[in-house]
Length: 253
Image 1 (cartoon, rainbow, N blue to C red):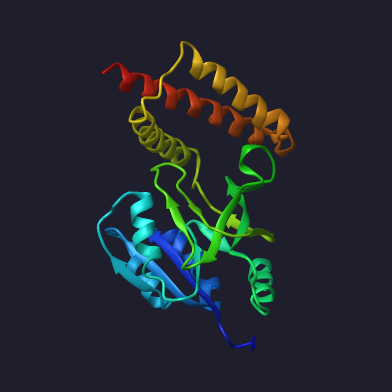
Image 2 (tube, rainbow, N blue to C red; image 1 turned 120 degrees about the vertical axis):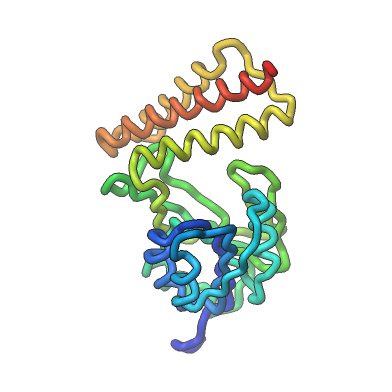
């Protein structure tokens, strides 16, 4: 691959009012042949920022995470798709690794990347948040969306390998943002599980929360991140309790 050639990849990003994140996410994407953005009604400068970086913006209604992603992925013109969230950043190391991978014939169907969260001024290197492997680059003719509103994912039919470089994840602005997101996604999770006739045993939320706290802090060594590791473990446990309480409430109606 020549130095000036771009990688034959369509980067696909879902966007709504992401101007702060986009200013960080878009600059490293110039090495990719195509950047596609599905905007579901931004009222800030998101669209202007995307267009200023040469991204192709598709405007449309919000269809939920899996259906919106499926629509966006189906518009990709390149042989490979890169699922990127607006709060993620492609590092220089990852860029160089991708260039190396695409310099030769690729014999796999997809690449997994390990995300590292940057939160309240620190990189989180242990606990539930790291490692965080996700399938993010895959052949555009070989994928299937797992249709669920929370933690939707992609399946490919072939070999997948893991890259060694990290993908930066600027998932939360602060604790208030984290808590607001927990409240939103716990609603989606409870609704999804209630439609599956999921039952909640007496005290189940506290047992599950205790296990998640222990796993995050001890088994996955969240304590090595110091006080923030403890706070994250508590937050994860609190999220579990909230999800199951909301599910119990829905099932009681």
